[in-house]
Length: 503
Ligand code: GAP
Image (cartoon, rainbow, N blue to C red; front, top):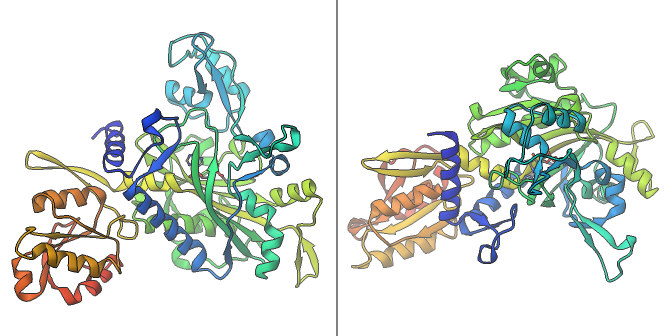
């Protein structure tokens, strides 16, 4: 299947089955905003819970916060976002359509301009005589466009009432660093994590929820003593994990990504510090745990010119999307940039007192950052399969059980003869333990197909034998194998299967 066609089918499935859709359709939509329906909400919650469990609940050295969305311009001034958080904008002289200049070049010239300066972008556009994608008109010179959404707080309209919707959740962690550290009595190294909305006035939102204007981030700021960035335990197994990697040097010499290990990336000093390697490994393991295929993932180091204003080293975990390798998640070394800036901006002491050395230090921050919608879309793209069943095309979402919106579907063979009643009884029992759906409409084949499409790993059928011997048929989505199990054992059996047990 062509890559574009695959994406079109994924979007069609997500809209048709009510996972998510453009927001406010009955009034006409605004690009870059989405609403989640039933299955999408379930899937989103599962990914969120899975992330929180992996990065927070199972680690004694990480605590969580939930910061506010609207915040004062003082914060964004100090963080550098007001001055630096922008994309190159270009406008058509004729039809006045506006584009992201780097995307225009990537689309038209099929080259990456990641990290190129505004001057270089303008040079490329002029040299290659690029025109408006809308009307073929001549283009203005590209300029910087700040991506922050501005708002006003309170009734007065003076400068002091200007506020912003946060473009990253991270800043709420930095401004609260001292309070959270003191109240949780955490010692370095430790992390503060947060899941919440972020807003970016993207010039050209595209690829469904890959790049939208309102989205959720799952971020952790991990604070490390500046002299202890290599004091980190990484197991041998993790150091020997294989990964496709593209270092800065390889990009400079125009090489493709290569399979390597984290040990080799650390020994060769491609990854600067052990704590940075540790969180790249954890991000990679988390996505593998969601069921994403290894061969569709790679890590790519940012070249110097593309680093964000706060970062000294960033690695993107990239996915091979239908539109090419793009960032799925980013793991940055933010140094002490943010804490230092907020100390300057607020005139408050944000240093950490180190008991061992009896000295104040500003911790260095390693930040694994994830987009929830982007993770969700990637999980779906990776799990999507369309295959021919006789004459008919069937869609199967091979979702990992840990994120499947519905874990078990329950069908009575017929509505009559007490079968529906029995099926509802079993549904009532199972739904206390797992995410279930009851369906009595259409043939069993149709009902299987409906569940395969939304990624339900197991289906149960209640038939006439059930009434005689208290057994039911369980069918596995990926193998389509079926077997009989006892009703009184099904909670335990399905529970084990959902944890990865063999069918
Ligand atoms: N705090 C660091 C930070 O915000 P980023 O690379 O700009 O870094 C982190 O964003 C993650 O947030 C990305 O890897 C991506 O998953 C997600 N993300 C960023 N912009 C997005 C957008 N416009 N729509 C959806 N997800 C986005």
